[in-house]
Image (tube, rainbow, N blue to C red; front, side, top):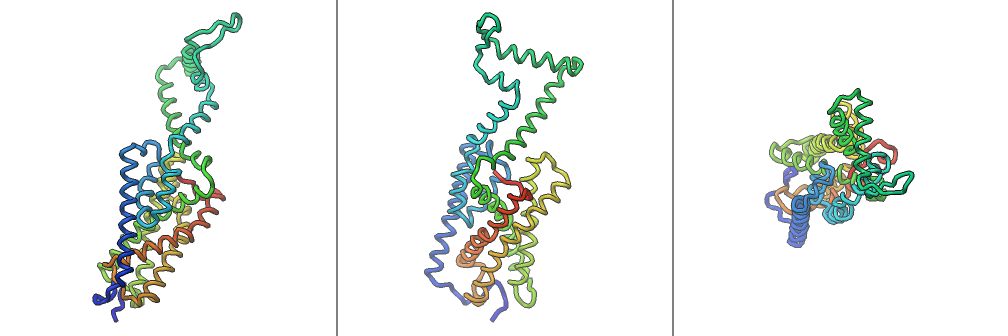
Length: 311
């Protein structure tokens, strides 16, 4: 018998398993395409954290029931959360608060309304700004730009505040899962193509190669989650991303690798080839287990402030 992850060329999975596998894979692909269509056609990307777009699309390829539900319930509801965040910003900024009020400012002595009340507040603010900066024009534009960028970062960091903890952790685990999916796809392809083995088994080589690629992709995903919220795109954020992703990805892979060992060694005795639908259905099942072994550690990482919530 071939000591190979690719299995025996003469082995054919049971017909029922093949049918179920194609159905599961087909639904997953349709779910991924639907999420892509929904994001693009309704321009939902304007109100989403950029890195979450590929996260939802990729996760639908294996965790489509949970991913679609999470996306519908929380992923595309950016407008509602944005409104809450904008309301908080307005309350904290006296100028924005004054501009948000109806234009019926009252005279202190006569009670007469002035239609230009908001404009008066704006003129007063501009005058104060000019005096404070020594009359240099144009500084306000620079300050406003920095404030806008700061608010954009704050928007994403506040997203989790209005979500249930279960939803926050689910999204974070999906974030981790996206890196695992890409890492496993690349790793499995390399192992099969190059026929790499450790101890005479491709399975053991896959554990190492898949983990390395999954960690690399996971750090990239985590980096682009932390950087926009922290406003820091330097090396320090890369280190933060590596620390945040290592534990969550490791626990995710425990579930996936455990199932890979079970179906490859025990159920199919290394006969199931990577060129079969059944093999990738088994990988879907393994990633489903990985989601739940990764869930508790993501809960702890977020609770302890080690990992940034995603939105």
